Image 1 (spheres, helix red, strand yellow):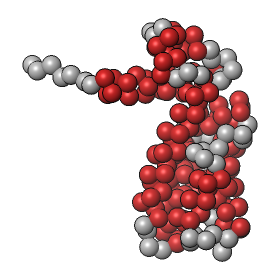
Image 2 (cartoon, one colour):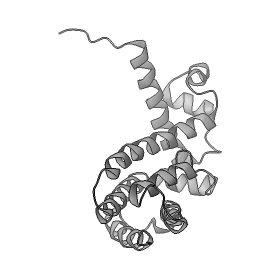
Image 3 (cartoon, rainbow, N blue to C red):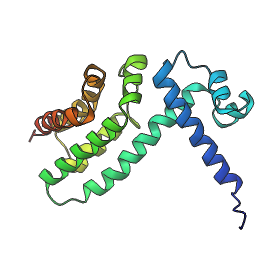
Length: 184
């Protein structure tokens, strides 16, 4: 059997992903403030120096977690922008938001509980503008921009629905988001 070698760059990517996965889980379970870098290093079997080599501060880890999910959604957004009709684009955005939101329920619960709404996806308003342009037009109206902001911020309510399964929550989200995006 041949030995598969990984490059140092590949090892770095893998190490960073392990850190992000463990941090997201620990932040959701313990809370951001209650998760120390030392705890994270111990969980991963790393020295603090090794952890700090990849991420100089706990805030950098949180930002990387948020950026990774935003990048996944942005890639989907590029595909959505190419859909020819507005109703189909709205359906695609709703499907993507629900898939992303439900797959990230624990991290969203954590963000709401620990940080409130101060942490926005990606680069905040510019990201929302990109979503509005993909759905509506190159020059979305203030009402359309508002709808996109409200749609994203509505996911802050997910912790209030912890008693519902994903299957129960998905149609509620779908119906609500369709109403929000109905602006002209």
